[in-house]
Structures are given as structure tokens and as C-alpha cells.
Image (cartoon, rainbow, N blue to C red; front, side, top):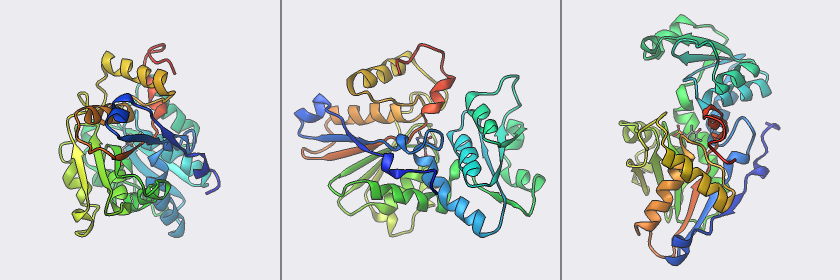
Length: 297
Ligand SMILES: *Cc1c(COP(=O)(O)O)cnc(C)c1O
């Protein structure tokens, strides 16, 4: 897959004063640098599905998402680059103006099919309605075993010295992959960014019994109200991160993850000597839906 260049990913050290004072090292894996559109974790979650589709001689990927779904735009671009056609089943009626995300997916050649919120709940019925032999279906958010197995590869980019790996979660697929790839001295911490109530159960469905005995924890109190709820406080925090570290974050996932990481450091939950790496899972295109001039980057 020559359009993806993992060499662009790098580890950025974050000299956060409160971490330094407590003898804690803090870094972030800049997975957002992987590709301008197929950013961050989305590539890792999609890659094995795309390969499976090609192996099974399918010529179209069909998947699901909302109007601001990073998964939808990543799937559209990854399919374009892999010479596959793509269909996006989109939650909610088509609006007069497409969101930036959907416009970008459409520009990459994705056929968008809008379905009511009610119809969207029944994915099996939708699959039957649009069924075709040439279509390979991918779950919303790329969730499932192949998604998690793909995300396991992210751990190859992380030095063994790190003791805590922190990620933002939506479906929990990336987190499941990180757990699969983790070593006994490492703990995976998932920040539940979407107020997803059944996250733990759904995430653990992607783990074997042995993997369920590894070190991991889901943290539920940093969702800032849920998916599309944004506060002035959050914008200010994102601008502070930019000013202090030239670190751009997205409104839905990575800013909440960074806030949680710094807050947990301040609260003293990490022992002295901890080496923490947060994962910048991408999603920056989602900031285009914000009003202009709110963010400084
Ligand atoms: C999709 C996404 C996530 C969540 O990944 P899951 O595997 O669904 O938990 C986290 N961060 C960003 C930027 C994303 O786009």
C-alpha cells in the first residue's frame, strides 16, 4: 500500500511541567501524520478489510457512518487509492449542504446513500436492501476482529520502554488492537470520548480470554458531554496545546484524550518513573466543521 508511509509517523516529546515534577515522561505518537485524509488509526483499522475484500474478488467496499465520520472519509480515500469502489450508508437525511467530511468522501468517489436515523439502526436490513455479490461490507467505524488485528500493528511503532499507552476510544477497536499488541509491563488506557455506554463489553468482544487478562482500563469521565457537544473550555484547551507544544488536536477525540492524560497526571494516578505515550489517532479534518477563527491552527 504505497500511498501510506509509516515513516512519517513520529514520537513527539511533551515537556509538561506537572509530569516533569512527578518524574514522569510524556510523549505522543503522531499517527495523524500518516496520511492527510486516511489519518491516524483509521488506516490500521481498514487495511485488513481492504485486503480481505481484494482476496475475495470484491470490487466495492460498503460501510456506515454519520455526517462527521472520520471512518467514512478514510474508507473513501483508501478505496480510491486501492482501486476499489466505495459506498457510504450515511445516518440521517441529506442536507442542502454536505458536511466537509461527506464532501471529501464524495470527491474521493464514494457513493453516498442517506438513510433515516430509524432505518440506520438496522444494519442487517440495510445490507440486505443494498446487497450485491461484488460488495464487501465493513462495520461502522471498522469495528470487528480484522479492525482490531490491523490496529495491533500500531504497537510496532511504540518503543518497549513505554509503560502506559493512552488512546481515545469510539468503538474501542483501536484499543482492542493495542491490548493485543501490548507487553506484560504495559497498560493500555482508553478514554471514552463518545460517552459510549456499552464500550467495555463491545471492546472485550474483540479480545481472547487470554488478552482479557492483560492490563487495560477504560476511563469514562472525560467525554465532555459526548459526540458533538463542544465547549468554549475545550477550544481554549486545544489552543493552549497548540501554543505550548505545536500540537494540533481534534475536537471529538484527541483533545479529550490529552486533557484526560494531563488531568490524570496531575491527580497523581501514575507512579513516578512512568513513561506515558498518548496516541494521536488523527481526525483533524473534523475541525473543519467548527466555526472559523476559533482554533489557532
Ligand atoms: C475513529 C477515531 C477514534 C476511535 O477509534 P475506535 O477504534 O473506534 O475506538 C479515535 N480517534 C480518532 C481521531 C478517530 O477518528
